[in-house]
Image 1 (cartoon, helix red, strand yellow):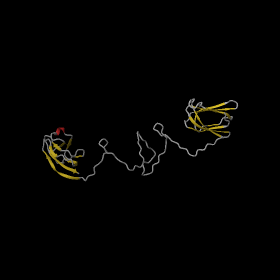
Image 2: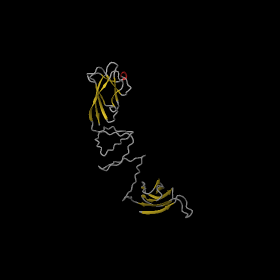
Image 3: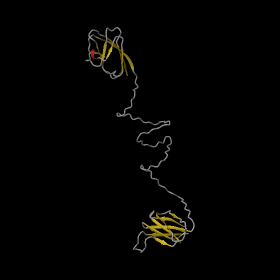
Image 4: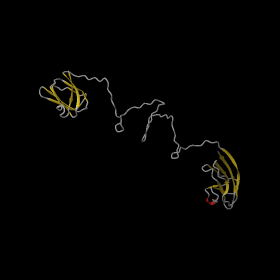
Length: 255
């Protein structure tokens, strides 16, 4: 076994007169390139005693060549000036790596699939773009934040203490338009309107003082009841037909 260390030039070097490449009569069975500081720039030709030539291109450190017939001539060319060290032996070369460093490039274009393990209480941030479908699993959510914004409001019910109160009955004369039943009150949560069975005729419940009986949508005949929950805090009025009047009993619920 012998080790050769040589500066091999890609072109003729006029300063030193050094010819390009490397050529020498070296006999052996295996050639191993131990080092090449210019990378994979070498072309290696091994010639046996019968003139058969085995050639490889674009190799560098770590290249191991063992032709079928032992060689007697070694020729090396390079595309860039390089400091080269190679071994020639009549046996084999067992290369052992005592330490290997590997860099893995994990880019968005070529992602490397990896498993992510997170311990409880030590979450890692995840950005989701698109729809996530989960099936066959039970999900337990902890530490969940809810954003209640004007653009995306979360419907909630205000928990308040509500008190019902009976309001004095309001008489409504015949042919009346817009008799006041209740003034506007933002704290009012509900209103119950009741037309006693003793009324002589129907009474209309209207939302404006100018609404006549004929344009009413809510008309209470004697014994009828109306529970207003959609706009209980508004002002409410009563109107009657020409011939008859009546009375409206009221009950409110306030916060």
